[in-house]
Length: 396
Image (cartoon, rainbow, N blue to C red):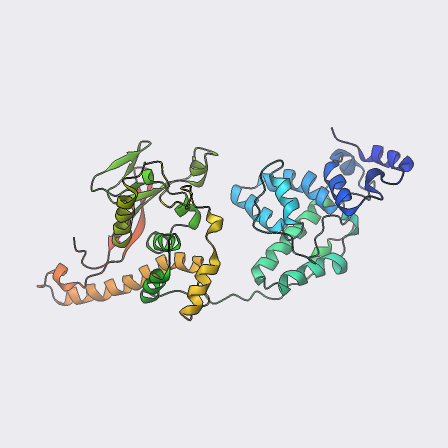
C-alpha cells in the first residue's frame, strides 16, 4: 500500500523523537528509508509538494529502477546496476535488484567513498555531491569512459526526479564537465607469448585460456560448458534437435543456459574445435573416464562447476609481470583469438601469392604447416554457424 506524501506530512507533525527515522541510529535510519514508499501521483500532480525526507536511495528503489531500469534490455539493466554501485553502497544496490536473495557481491563498500544512500534528494548539489563523487572515481584510477558512465547514470536519475516532480531546479550533474576521453593503448599478445603463457598456467586457468584463445569464448561461457555441448567424434550429433558438427562445440544463448528463457531471438554459436584444444579435451575426457554428458567440462575440487568470479585476474597478472607484459588480462587473451587470426590471414595471403606464382606446384606441399585455424560466421538454414577455415596445410 502506498503512503501519500500529504499523509506523511500530517503524521510527522505529531511524531516524537525516533519517529519517521528522526533520532535513529544511521543504520536504523537507512532501514527506515528503504522501507517507506511514496505516492507518485501526488508528486506529479503537485510538483511543489515534495517530502523533504525522500532520500536518493529511496527514489532509486521506488521510482528509477521500476520505471526506467526495468524497461531496458538485460544488458542495459546490467549496465545500470553496475554503475549504481558507485552512487549507492553495493550492498544496497544488490538488495534492490535481488530482494530476499542470496547476496554474493564481488564489489564491497569502499570506506570514505561519497555514497548517496542517506542524502536527501532535494539536497543534492554540484559542489557537495557531484564533484566529490567524480573526484573519487578519478582518484581510484577508473578510466575516463567509466567516469563518464557514472556521471550519465547520475544525470539520468536526477532528470527522472525532475520529470516526476521530486527535484526542483537545474540538474546539478549537468554542471560538471569531464576531461576529454583518453583511450588506452590496445595491447595484443603474439603466438609465441601465448604459448609461454599457457605453459606457465595451471588448471583450470590453462584450460580457460586455451578456450579463450582458440574459440573467443567468454569466461562465463567456458565455465558453463557441459560435455553434451561438445562433439569430439568424427560424426554428427544432436543436442535438443540442434545439429552439432563433428569436432565442434555449441555455445547456447545466455538465457537458454541459465534457464530464464528459451533464448528465442538469440542464436547458438557452433565453433569448430581446433587441434590443440581438441587433443586437450580428448585427454581430459579420458582422464575423467568418459564423463556424463551433463557434467561440466571444467570442475572445481568439489566436483561442481567453476564459478566465473573465482577465475582471478591476479594469477594472470603475476604471469604477465614475469614475462614483462604487465597489461596481460583475460580480455587480452580472449582478444588474441582475433588478433592471431589476423596474423595468419596475412600469412595466408603470402602463401597464396607464392602459389599463384608457381601454378605447377601442388598447393598442399607448397604451404607451411599451420596449426592455427580461424572461423567465420555463416547462416545455415536459419542457424548461426561459425565455420572454421585453415590457413595452410592441415595434417591429419
